[in-house]
Image 1 (spheres, one colour):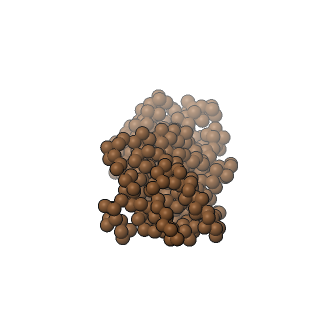
Image 2 (image 1 turned 60 degrees about the vertical axis):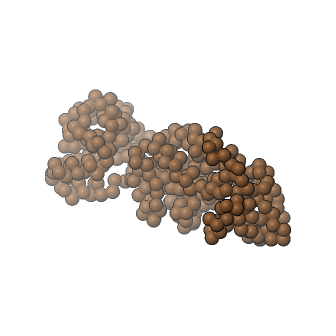
Image 3 (image 1 turned 90 degrees about the vertical axis):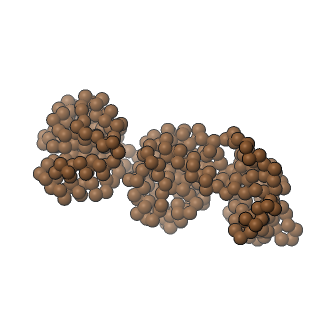
Length: 383
């Protein structure tokens, strides 16, 4: 029998494939996932326009220097640092800092606060929650009638934020610190979409709302949007770094998971909990078998399985202990055609990959079944 106390030697994401859509910090996220055993498929869904080349940022910077606002809101550390660096490159750095010293400067969160202070400035206030909603509440409570408010945009939508300020009587100036554009090479994005639709991914991560919107837009261009939404709603776990990032997905009815703290580390930890929790675990022929995305744990030993073998195993596991016909298994094989011999070939390779041939029984003239332990029969009889 399997040893319930046996400790796995693999990471919690072993056997799972995770898609990464990030353009920025993708290497960091990929390394965190791989360190925990996951396989990573990366396709930046966007590219970022270099700050110094962005005429919109230059125009907004000049306007702030010429007409100093009453309030400036810094929303991201990388964006604020980039803004100051770009202004320096244009010869406007000192003039911009001089104006910012005389305004009510609000910093969203500790990282932004650090960037503000590194520039030689001091924030007047920062919310403990790192929430833009708290920033908005403070401004509306103070009253914004007749005030000029400049907000450092960071490529993500701020639903209702600008509208609420304008409704309160404020003049709002957006400072577009960097802009998102589609990737120059769309090939990796298409491969990521194909992997998601074919269930070659177990999870898809999003770290910005524009990346989510861009991926969905590309799926629509290719006529794959309904299939993509079906995958995200059933088999491919959509994991977002925070609620703002999730908005484009939620607008299309996709439920996402998000960590309590909007950081890459907690996002990865969430996947480490969610994906193993979604895996099918069965007692088969005296072994504990856990079916993951592209591998199987047999008594905590990781066994990589070819895609055809995984298709067969999933078909068998949908009715554990019941005989599944060769014809039905043939339909589960991608691109197998009509020759049932393909089932026998794939089954032989599956048994070899599992390292325990008795897990799957051949039922002469009928098909195959998982050798579910007798004690589990009642539990799984109506599955």
